[in-house]
Length: 111
Figure 1 (cartoon, one colour):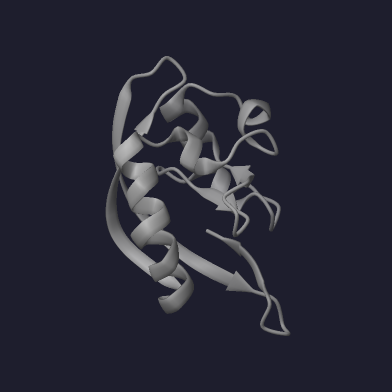
Figure 2 (figure 1 turned 45 degrees about the vertical axis):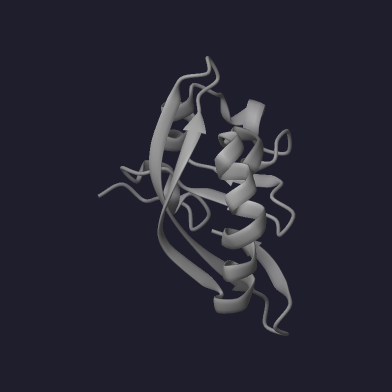
């Protein structure tokens, strides 16, 4: 098995993985997510908010339900969102998210 860096373990998973700040700013994305939506890593990371990629209904649901629930429970499982690819094709996805905190308990990002 090929050695991989501790920081790039998510790159070869057969599902999309994002790491985002609490405000939704994309900090990292894996190859699958980029390919699924037709973006390069450079077009997403530190360039977009993840909710910019959602349908209008998804954006509203994200603000009113998904983010508040994620902040309250620190994880959310199996929420259906429609993403739009770079060429505006709707891509349905099942989203799981988890809040990640540092050793002092401060929110660092969401996976």
